Image 1 (cartoon, helix red, strand yellow):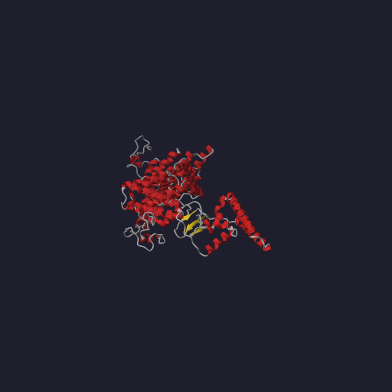
Image 2: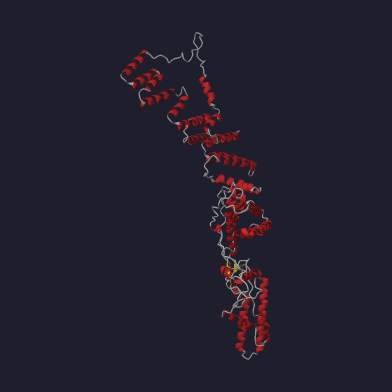
Length: 634
């Protein structure tokens, strides 16, 4: 069958003596043919008197006529070989003509050969082969060959074709067969010429026929097509590019594999440059088998298939509460101008009513528009932020977040303002001549004048940590060098102006680990084959997280993750991490690939308890990796 022929030719292509093997496969055994030729005996001719045929040695060339022999001899006496050869041709002694021409120079020899072939080719068909070989005209032989005898023509090309000419000669023979309507055998000749784009045409035709017969994609036929192309590609150059039709068939095959859960295998066949294929590669890269998919893709993360575009945030509308308050305040002012004799109690009642209405409207707006808290914060609450806090906009998501310029802390939720004047409000209402709005007006000039109130001890947890600890582990309250190193120079102390009862004995600060500074994620240091999957898995997560939109705090966490991965990799390459610790990190990566973040957190916590002293420089990044992966890779 045709499939058997395809795989027979496929096997020959990978043989060292491929052209000799091709002759045997086509049915031309050189040893058998040579033995038959040497043992040949002509039994077709016999003497008329019944005597058995003469041996080959006893047969000779027919005798030349006396007149012709005399003319040839006279020409030789004067050295005119050309005339002697012409006389031999006229008398029919072609063999004598060839012998004499070999002594008359190259030009006479070529001329005599051409004359001989033209006279005898029709009587002896094999002479056309001899002529094509001697004159290096194999292309003409192919163009005049019989398509039905393509095996013989291919054998001639395999025997006499030069190495650099053989592919083009096979291409010419394939085109000859294609023109004659023999597409299957033409594809075999294209295979010999290593012409994938030509050989694959008939394979695609077979696939189309199978799909047409089934009414949908025939996955078995598609598998057979991909199998032939994939094996054949191994014989070609590594930079061979598939045409768009073939690459789309590879994408269809990869899609079918991914639908069956074979993610790593599907990654090998994503060879199309279409948008759908890019999206599939990205999905496979971020799947539970991300590490294996990355290896199948050559170790390089795929291109992110989507383009990010910041759409911004709609401009905030003015709060209905502020509009109502302004309107009612204007009415009260107008009434005061028209009725200057209005009593203080009436003013209080009007203003108190205004404040009450404003509070009721505020509650209505809050209950109706709770989802628009960010817009309200942008429009009217920026003045209520605690000291040091500012409202900013995230460039990637367009959302509003809040940052403390003193401590560097950031939060998506608006921090609550410290109300230092709440204790004064009851007494303000107790005085008949003082209103709620007057109390508020008294606070605003104080803020404008730069009055700052120290937040109480019950402030946000992050502020408490920032004011109490320098690095999260050693207090800076008893050691000023720590405060200076970590920027906590303003830390409050109960010992201002007096001698401290005790100062922590802290040695010289060690220089930051040079591991992360010399680490290049694109060219990580060499590690053992046993540990390479661990490093590849960690780098895969770093690269994957870079493709996600991150907040300011998440970007800081990613920086710690990348730093930790770099330190871990370099320590691993220097054999500074024992086998047990490396094995636990491998288990952590496996848990991440399985989306088992609980197990990953337990492994990291166990490593902190056992190896924090020697490996704290990368264990912190491991914790951030688990947290970010839990957020992004659900």
